[in-house]
Length: 269
Image 1 (cartoon, rainbow, N blue to C red):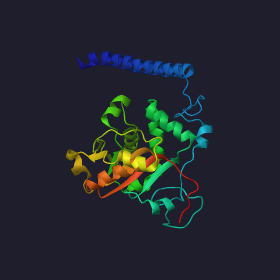
Image 2 (image 1 turned 45 degrees about the vertical axis):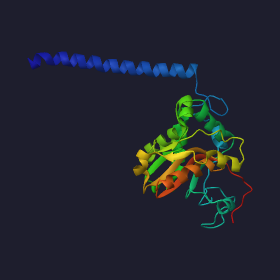
Image 3 (image 1 turned 30 degrees about the horizontal axis):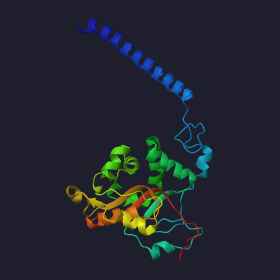
Image 4 (image 1 turned 135 degrees about the horizontal axis):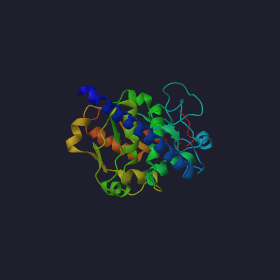
């Protein structure tokens, strides 16, 4: 009986294989037709691009941050001042967090990428941005127990539908294997946009805005945390988040962002 059924099973197997091959060819042809009809455009200059949203010309304009930089704030130096020398800003305004690193300077192309991810639903940019962050933050991530994204207030999260910092953190989790605690830190009161505010106003705006959830405090206690965000400007938001994590007994807090604002005239001491 098995011998009689065998040819039938063989025919069915061949048919299924042929169907899968035909389906694959159809899917490939459909993708090609869609790419021709609606080519991927560079997020910065809107020229057609084959890749992750940035053309070769705009890629060349991205200013990746590499040593030498301030060991505390990750601010790039124009020359190498020697080991362990801090920037003027790190000495004058030491943050609550231990170290900060950024993948790129916050210039025109970086700003366009950040705004597209944040406000234009371009979550397809997160994988590339997250990989660049993982590379820039290797030393932080090697020591880390936990990734915590800077949270949105629930009202803003509802209107935006996703948290851009969480999207970047998920990519870094996949790249490094460091566990993501996406709900550990919460924004307990809404804050106004930081854009246009002075440094003191930014600090006041986010004061008391963040808190570790009571049911997640055990996840934070004694852990080395890397806080994930898209942009570091004055540092007020990341500093407020770091203070909340340290109050919850985190062993240490480092900060990893995609881009940071750099004042080129500030020299090391």
